[in-house]
Amino acid sequence: MNGRPFAPMAGFGLLAACALPPEGVTQDDLVAFDEAVASIGCDLVGESDYLPVELQTGLTREQVIEVAQYRVAAESAVSLENGGVRLISGGCAPK
Image (cartoon, rainbow, N blue to C red):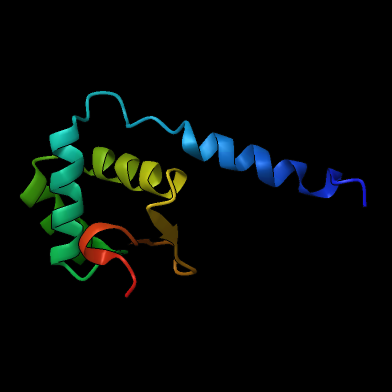
């Protein structure tokens, strides 16, 4: 093999490493997001998940969605088959 089939995957790793937090979201907001998502069981799927995260963090729904997308891009969360997101870092790190 000439190594080319793996080139797109290598590029994805660089993209993930360069992920930037959403505009207007601070480091404190990211910490609060992680803590809030951990407090609801580490999965962010539906209304019953989003609302407590919004209330605990003070972030809007749009910001919560953007932070979840950022966490997936940064590889500290994974997308779920049901359309949700599972945090896999901090208090939600797999054991």
